[in-house]
Length: 295
Ligand code: SF4
Image 1 (cartoon, protein in one colour):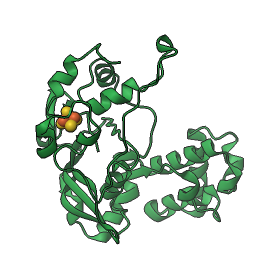
Image 2 (image 1 turned 90 degrees about the vertical axis):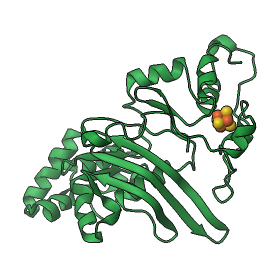
Image 3 (image 1 turned 180 degrees about the vertical axis):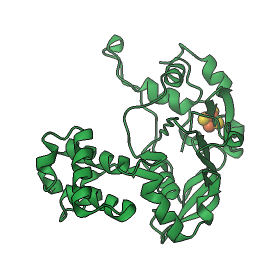
């Protein structure tokens, strides 16, 4: 996974809400061990939004599932690191305590609403169940709260639709119902898998102006531009590596136009680029300095 964003651990001592340290997740498959997450670290403070970007298969969803404790085990296993939530390591908690935290303090908006919702239960029943189970609400109170939540995420005529089933809603409405579910118990942290908004504007601006990783630069170069009509569209060559055979050194080196000898042997650490930005590239300074030289 390529992480260019907030430097890890910057708020760890100030009591970060979530502090992921050196997380490692692997999948034991018949073809070998797939190293899906290799030492990912980041912190999220209360009130803060953190975006993690990366190619399909780079471990974003697996990281989120590990934090939430819903990794399919087997074949997935957390093999290293810590996930501190309110200062306590989730990985060392018992299953029952973790289950209690999930939903009440830590929630997730899944990317596939249709498969995440139960098709044979009305959405009102699924939303209401959370208030019955976690807040001791009566059936009627739970239904009222469900209607309120549906209204809050702008489902038209929410009160008359609490008895409808997931397939009776459009894809966009189902996604909003998933958001309502995540908001229901007012958790301290919501993890949204594949969100499209809420990036921090300052960091995004800097990232566009002066990317600090060849992969980020490649992504920006591959965006079609009207002023380059008729010119071949730039593409990052090759494919992401197999997770069971990750190249030594920098995992991006076989595809990187900037790769040098050290890249083939030494894995780059995360270098601080600026407050709130870091880059896992030995040559991030040169990359930033190449502003304007893109094809
Ligand atoms: Fe490319 Fe080397 Fe930087 Fe990896 S460390 S992104 S191979 S220049």
